[in-house]
Length: 136
Image (tube, rainbow, N blue to C red; front, side, top):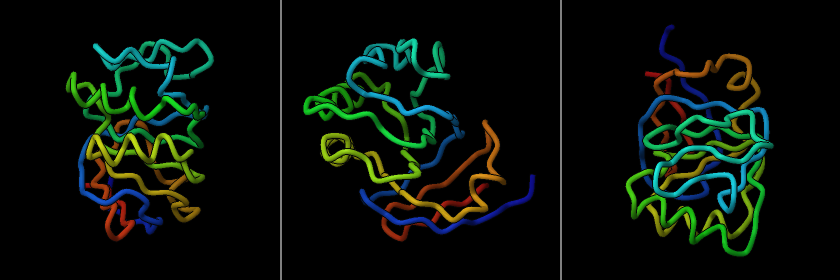
């Protein structure tokens, strides 16, 4: 697939690269992920059984909880964290806090073409400073 660039809005600064792991369902960092393995264990997720470690996690939304930040940070401690998050909507504040602590860039509200052009497994570079997403 040809290189492509899409504009989004940066929420958490930083840069990361990884293969896209695309979900059609919201994900909760509190309960849907095993922090030691990075595996999705929540039965409500269409990613059940997939591993988020090192991947650019593409979600419609995050399902929040006041403690979600701890789980995202613990994923970092166990080196099982996603490389970056791309969301349709703003994440809940606890996920944003966890991403800041775990150095996981977040971009939101990518342009419409992103959602039609993106394929699971595409190699992406995410720039949380500029909001730019590039397929490599």
